[in-house]
Image 1 (spheres, helix red, strand yellow):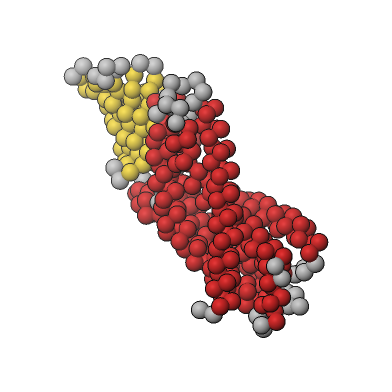
Image 2 (tube, rainbow, N blue to C red):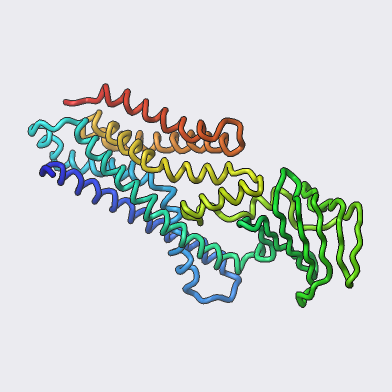
Length: 357
């Protein structure tokens, strides 16, 4: 590795880490304040807010990586400008395009480490964070998950607890469903089986139900069943996708498919993780071009503002396409790749016209 390459790689990684730890500290402090407010009326150890903040902060930082790269790149170039090191590279024959190439490769490598190591680490911490947080949440009485055995729901209505298992979800209907109702002492009160249950509202409509109660079985054409769940709430209480590693997301996708349930949100998360290194490279190139295209020292503040402005615009554009993909207004693959392709083209156009002086 050439000397200037080592210098650029080392300096860029140092700038990235500086911004990373500053942002991590800010997120950690804000999380502590949020957790202190949450536990203010709960009888828990005073260290709980700190403990939970440690577990939840990495997941938030993962979402901020594109902006960390953009800001880190800007500060890296500011250091080069202030020490006049950029001119030394110029005199040695190094072009701006070569500098950007080196930084892009470093960004891609860090991006690979981010999705293979950091995301796995943050998703596991987020999983434990949600487990602990749910113990203090009102929603601990209500739970909906999907696994290889189908859809499982825990639903508490009054003094009774309903455990529901369905092998398939078909739009607003559950099929091949078994419901067990328990009293407050968790003694079995009754069980219901049905091949068709309308869950579009909180009052479920159970068709052709078979009810087993007091050792007596009877068939009823239509049973109205009160629940805290409807189809939308079941969706909202599924596993938090940010708490699942890439491999677990792939398994969850298979489970969704076996239940005939929409995999759009899972696919979106998978695409997001897989394309993350490319997105980080795009942000690095964009920030580098902005910083290199103006050399006057009094324009650095303006360039930082321009960079931050672009980052906000990119965030909203990317979020808009994600929403359009999640709501299936456009094909999912289009919603994921359109922002990346568009930003890549913008970067290429700007690279062609980059200032090499």
